[in-house]
Length: 299
Image 1: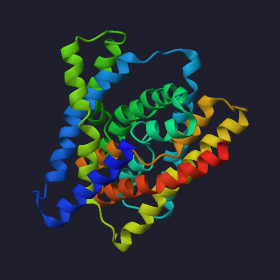
Image 2: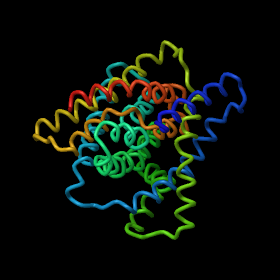
Image 3: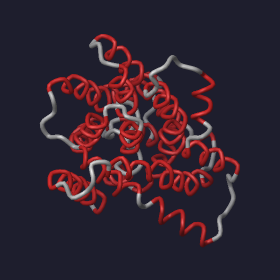
Image 4: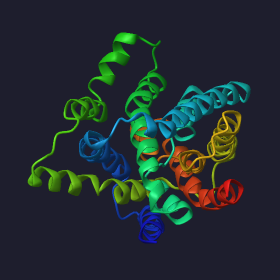
């Protein structure tokens, strides 16, 4: 309940600040830069070393990557058919593919499937969307925000200078290491700033009346994220006859709202910032209904 309240309060605060012009015009950009360079690396260093890479826990991560692969292909095909610009396609490749698997995933799945499902949520998040954000997200942001032809040297350089990816490499090296209490407290404090700051940043850019040109990409992103993605997860589980708790968690996770930090990244690199923020903001609101329908289906 607290998480849901925070969502609405932070979004409303950001939107109100935007309308009242209480912050400078570049406030959302500044918040996004803080999240990407400090807060998100902190949560990576805090969570990734704790992961238990056992075979039994890998199903949600595998489904996460399958869902993201098909979602990205759908986005590419629809973007080409609808003749979206490179900037808009790049934005949709982030917010239409990456899912909000932890902040929304944990409270929603805990409410529907109970606390025993949370372990699978963490696997879907850490080995699925977390890794995808650091690797796939960096690639997409670098490629679609560049005005020049793709150069692998440039992509390689950006990937290995991207703070979340650097943190991910360090986290893998530190796998199994127990941090000192002071370090843990610092990482926890920094990581806890992600959600409120990201939601305020979304609110700062949120538009309830979208320009007509944004309606098609807006609908495309939410169609793929909230309908196509869970259908892919359902089809995969039905085909391989997966009916376990891990499968149910994966289906619900696939239908969650767009990843907040994906919207942050899209905004930070100039990929349709207002459109990306609107997709994330509306996606959060719509996903409460779509995940309820998914739960009724898998139950």
